Length: 330
Image (cartoon, rainbow, N blue to C red; front, side, top):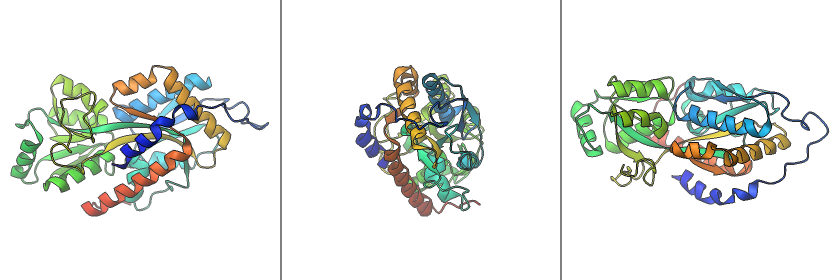
């Protein structure tokens, strides 16, 4: 997967980007921020995205001396929230937590996406990645991937998979799995990870793909069973869990990634201020340890570097949607 090679390329430059803040001109930028900052998360409370957003917001708040308010604006796999921020004033007071769903998948999945993923935003140079895991309801009579695929084939399309919503990364990962395994299942979309996980844990739905933070409590309680990691290497939080690559499915490499962004016309001085404040905040508090304990990997880089990363993800998921013949939405 290209994101892994991207991480290897940029992870080593973390120290270089923490430089003195750019000199502000004698206007409103001089004392930025002078009021609370709105941090828009594209999903409901709960799940990996909300966990990442709240951790980043807290770290940023400590650095800039202002409250960073979380606004959960769910719907259409993040398209609603992303369009909202695209139209917000470019003054640094509205930050979007962009994601694979909003900038890698959404522009392909929604034919009338009300924003341009490249022209309307500037990344702030922090990437949080959660490798995905396939988990099933623990009452299913299977112990491994081979047995699961055999059961799905036996049930002939009557088994179901949950997702945080149509066009989300877990949805596209599940569709890729169905293509690679040559099986059919029923898609049950939800508005966010939290309600989806609850229904898989209770047996209302059979399986789902999601980030480890969303699944871990139910895996530990015994209500869910982890089957395989959708990553090139084993998950540090579940070292005994095999990867799809190990099990013969090398194309099954995906992660949830989140990236703070601002409207594209935001002054460069403010972009630099936010970039450096986020990096310092995540390094100087327990935020990084908290994210890593939740299964995340962090990359600290420059806003410019992450623009290529977004384009690579956009290209990759366009191919997956086309090859899987997934219907798009208006």
